[in-house]
Amino acid sequence: MTALSRSKKRVFALVLALALIIVIALVAATSGLGRPGVPGDAVAEVDGVDNGTVTRDAYDHALEQSIARLGIKEVPPPSDPQFAQINDETMQGLLLAIWAEGEAEDRGIEISDDDVQAELDDIAKSFKTEEEFAKVATQSKFCTEEELADGGSPEDCADVQAQARLLALERQLSDAFQPTVTVSDADAQDFYDANKESFETPATRSARVILNEDQKQVEAAQAELEGLSSDDPDFEKAWKSAARKYSQDQASKDRGGLLEGLVEGQGDPQLDEQVFSAPVDELVGPFETDRGFYLVQVVDDQPASTQPFDEAKAAIKQQLQSAREQAAAAEVQADFIAKWQRRTSCIDEVMMQFCRGFVAPDDAVDPATGQPATATPAPVNSTSPIAPGTATLSIDGNTTPGLPQGPPVPESEAAAAPTSTGLPQGAVPVGPDGAPVTGAPTTGAPTTTAP
Image 1 (cartoon, rainbow, N blue to C red):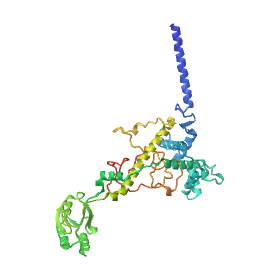
Image 2 (image 1 turned 90 degrees about the vertical axis):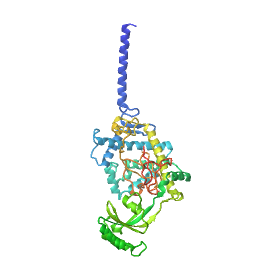
Image 3 (image 1 turned 90 degrees about the horizontal axis):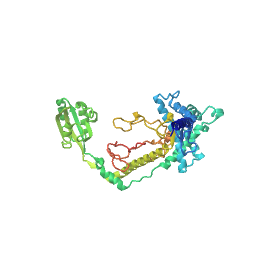
Image 4 (image 1 turned 135 degrees about the vertical axis):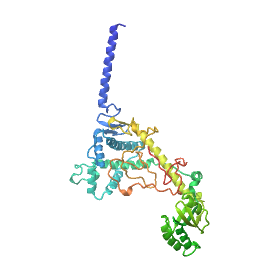
């Protein structure tokens, strides 16, 4: 090969490389800064959904609604840490609206005009007057002055209509997402057997006491109370008088010296020793402790007991049902988010956790454990709940159906707070398989952290 031909090939390669660079630059300029599937006039695109594009105009308008709701005068610059939170909230609302439409289409769910009107009626009921509704809708950037000109109703504003449709979509999707779980008597029995100690009530004693740093004062009380039995008509009156005159124990002196439901090993060891060894109804003391001198009379002795399975079964099944519903709901939510995140492309400027390719910032990882640090999600306004008594599930991973940027819904439809499971004090919450959750709180139904 001649030197001339080699030189021509090198020139041709350089020209080709330059042409490729120009083509790439042109594509980037017209395709959302190089993000596949994002048009040049958009910030995000959801594949496979009609009207799945989040345009720049729609994003800017949603930003205005976000700052209006947060009471901020203007959008902070991207360098401001607050911008990330506002952007996340704004994009979450925009993307969830598209995701909801896409999921409804996949499931064959249709929203009628009546469904939308029902949501509009609920929104309107949360305001005392239509004037108040219009004022809030205007301040929240959901209605323009033009839309409300000549007596226009806020219900007819385009953004309010869109919000009502999305509320109706979320309601039906939440119903469709509800998991079906069952709990058998055998499941409840397994839980009862594994947590027998949770259904045990320890032995307790109740006693009347006189406490004083001065032994002579306790002896004076003893002289007044000697020979009295709890069956005597004047017993309570005599103890109330003696406790007021002689006792320095603030916990009992105003109650006739009465300390109820004492459990051995949970109080003052020196007092426990006497209370749990003294015969019932016998006046014991004075005896010295680190707190002073005591006079004690045990008035009640309750042996330890265990709640029978038949009495605990209903509460156990309720707790297991709640735990399994929440675990199943969390799995459905995770699948939903993963499904639509894979289809969602965003430009770098608005990148957040719902976008494909999102990488959490370094400060979102706990350097000590290497695990994701606890983060506060962008605020999301709650919307109409599922019927009380069912496990709440939303399409965005929150515990109640969530929808950003919406006018308030009636307080009467606020989701009911979790109630106690009815299990005995100390009962252990369970995981989705019915096994006890070690180290979990023992009050109320267990919760599941949504993805």
